[in-house]
Length: 487
Image (cartoon, rainbow, N blue to C red):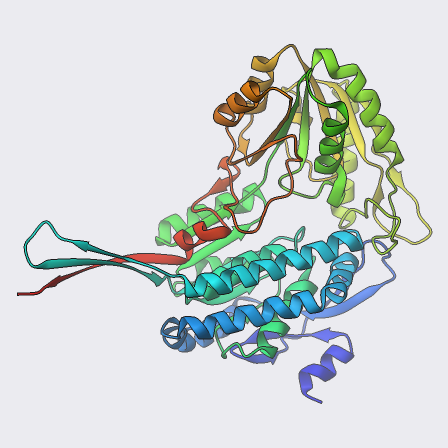
């Protein structure tokens, strides 16, 4: 039994630095939000010096990995994708215990991560360039893509397997070495992916995992001069800080920061379709999605019927332990997030909204449970419609017609995802063209995207090149133009 296997058996989990599992001490317990008596494991937190060690390993490995064959990269990523699929129940259960998603959602997210790894395994084989004729005689022009170098990845707690996958896989597919810091609330899933990479032959230094606080490990990654690109998903405030630092240091940067996503329901919508889409978008994954439907903008003619049916179905949702197969909504991720959610419920009342649900719930085990909440009778100037709540809370805004609905939808600093429920092809087409969002859904929840297409938004939601799909190449590579004179 190796030292690392022994530590894992004891519930202690270390950092992966240059192909070796390294303890920095300072172990922090990973607590199950469904049952705070359940400790998933203890994870060793690093600091700025830990990042320095990881960078040194990556610098040693970068040239060889950049020069590795597409087949070698394919083999690694495909093997990890296959392993995730084969162990989906195990990984899904870990995710459910760690983050609070239902077991079904955890398994689904694990399969999404598998698909992402396998997609980018294929992309490793599909890297192409251009050979062009010059405007000058006997000169050829070749345009190729090369890895940007060492990439820093900083990932959030709400999708602790899928988001690391859609950052790690393209980074490695295009020949970059990685320094990754997962959210300190959910280190377990990232650690499990690191184990899979290690088990399937990832060369030392190519992938490095440094767990710890954003203020120490994250800041060290962002400011390190040898890390040439940063991909971050998280809060607006942190994203703005990273953009400022990377701008001064001339680093490539990619930011995904949040949303206040509108779902428009028009009079001609199929009520059952609209309610189903809004329930899914607003409350599933406990509303802890940057693509969640947080503002339900409803045309006057269908408003009362929509609110009545939405309330009925919302109140029937079962909130409970993420591992209970009957649970539809798991707990909030931790006490801090629950406190913030409850403060927004109180704020909604103070802003004269009608509040349906939203109270803290008690269950047989100690956990962070909250009933889903609907805030009715709101207008778009209220704070509850301006600020991202990031919990199972949705507002309802009544509008007179399509034009007002579109104006309200666009009246936000964010622009990630937007949706519309309507049977009018004309209005759906107009909405798709005019709404200020990076992703648009028609008669579908605002949350839930495919793994092979670009993900990202506009305005305050996103900055830099898109994530996922073939568009990921724009961030993880740089373009080189070569000229050859044939004589």
